[in-house]
Image (cartoon, rainbow over all chains, first blue to last red; front, side, top):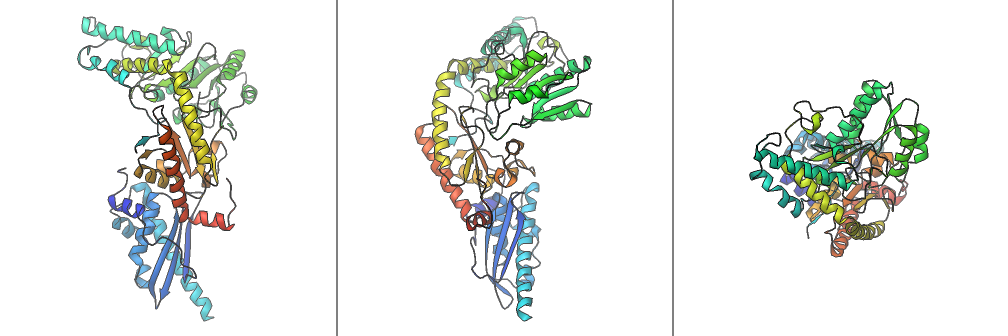
Length: 128
Length: 395
């Protein structure tokens, strides 16, 4: 199918960083099954660096590829840098997405931000 | 292995149809409206095709109008019946919630013009209840339009009973028979059908050609204005090769209808049995009253487009009612109409087989679907929540 770029198909067929991190430092879940997309991100963080990231996704080809690409873009990066990741950057790294699939990249950005937020609130909880 | 399992979308042109068509591109290419021989050859071919098409549904030759396909035929049938209704002060139409968009969107257009439309429930099994149809008929009802067989879930409607009810109440009856012609035995007389739409490429004919049957006395309203072709009811130079190909395809399909149905039903049921063994899966629509070639399933915890792409990698061409495959926000209106919730409707798969499928192909499809569903579930957060008990299984 020529619907997607080679890169999208590659990340869809061979998704990177699939799975779960037990006792993750931050977990974010966005989307809902009613719309047909759910993304869940797990982060392992040490000294404000994303040491490891894993994802689980219920969704279409571009949702799976966007999750995979997003994890690659933030792995090993400082939290401050991961926070600036945009959906556009995810879509560009995939050599583009069809217009009506752009929301998949938005979901990937939101999932990462939600996992980082979760990490921060867990940290705040610990410091109390 | 390469398996084309999307025959409800379109079919391969049959060799017989192709051979019949070829001379009409390069030899008898004249305009059928011209009086010289080039044209008259084409004119004769069209009239012979009309006879073959009429015969296949037990209609009279004059009751067949050639169109560009099923959508045009649906539009013309409904707009014609509505015009007749309006002249008699009747502006109520009955249809079903899971019609093709060629019907639903035409009805929406009529609603804006003041018509009232009742959409019948199709229930969990995807079949209209004749008694509910009869109860919905009012003195101002001018048309009942119910599809012969559904394009997504393949369920066959009680057409003869509906026809009898419409006749009893003096209401016109149209059926979108795009998925049925060439696959099921159709008799417009016995079924009391007043208007019927069909499309050639769904029965191994060419694309861009279809027909509208309109019982004698049912006045057609033009959708396309212009020349006097098709007795003035459908302007535009006739698609001669297309019409000839459609007639050849319909003759062939009708001649092998029992044999093909038997073969496909057997394979269909093997596929249904095999796919039913996938945990938390469910067949869409009635298991028996369905087209011989239709297998439609929902799988919990996965999304249909991802499934289709991976099946395509394995050489299997199929389709899904998932929102993601159409670019729409909502999943298929057909699946919602039979009561599938959004979460489950996104995980749908439609396989529509041809008589060419082998038992080996059936096993290949079952294995491929099973392993792909399993794989997608292995990293689906929805599936995790279903399995851990955080969410409740629906299927």
